[in-house]
Amino acid sequence: MEAKKWNTQVFINERGNDTYVRAVLTTQDGTTIEGTGHARRNPADRAVPEIGDELAAGRAFLDLGHRLVTLAGADIEQAQRLG
Image 1 (cartoon, rainbow, N blue to C red):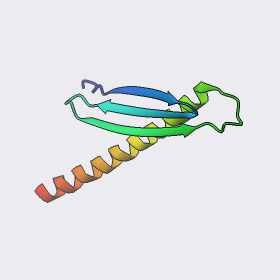
Image 2 (image 1 turned 60 degrees about the vertical axis):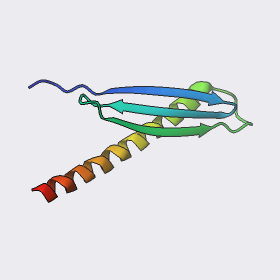
Image 3 (image 1 turned 135 degrees about the vertical axis):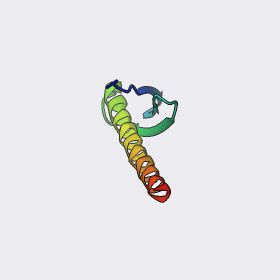
């Protein structure tokens, strides 16, 4: 059996104390699904950009996972109707 390959790109933008991440998953057939995440550093905390990147990226992947599960649920419903 041939393994399927899905690609993910992660885009990280920092603006002041805020980090925004967009995770874009592209399936082998070209379907694209996006998840977003955000992190905000408390101004009283020491600036460690990697922490904001990790937190915002983790949130983007959680969002992406939720969207994938929702998409699968819709596909299941459609398949049952066509049954």
